[in-house]
Amino acid sequence: MSHISAGGAIEQLFYYTDNQRVQRTYGACSDAAEAALIRAGFDTHSYDTDAEVYHAAFLALSKAGTLPDGRTLARAALDVFADDPTWCSDVIRSRGRAPFTYDTAADLAGPGTSTAVAARKAARAMARAAAVARSGDEEWYEAAGIMVEVIWHAGEAAGLPPLEGRRNCQGHLRDFMGGEIPQR
Image 1 (cartoon, rainbow, N blue to C red):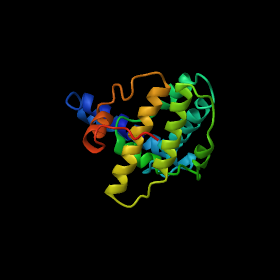
Image 2: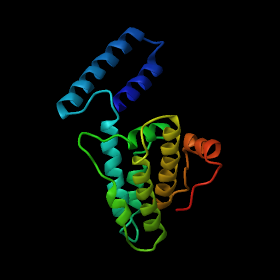
Image 3: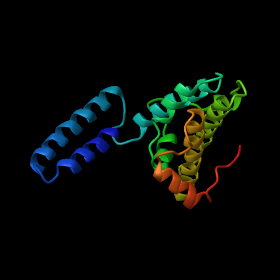
Image 4: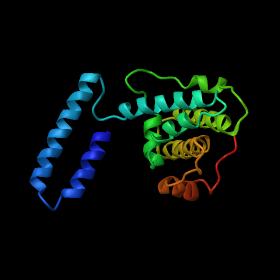
């Protein structure tokens, strides 16, 4: 789905200069990206590619939770999350090409440093978000709120101010979560 977002950004930038050329370029890039996804075993209109990146972020946060100072791993994980909690909600509840389990989050242990504790909180929150049912808007927003929590704790683990530069996550926190991250 990332190629669609990138194509849309290019289209917006150059729409009024040479729209036909932009459309041809966008079409060619989109066709090539979809062909590559199909060859790799992905459904072209799903969140599965992004879900696999989130799986890697979970593993990075899990590892950061075992180290006294896993800020670099936490920062890498943080960088994959979009500043759109509802998008994150859809992605985290997708499987990827093969089933992926977040069951290991419950057993995470490590040092008591603030970085490690925050990384483990982020990984455990990802597991909770992935377990939310896909049945309606209420669940969609529930998982979105949990993903704001993930991004908050991942920011702490990365040594950054939580939700810094993430206007949409800050808005979701304010508008749907009463301005507070649950302390778990």
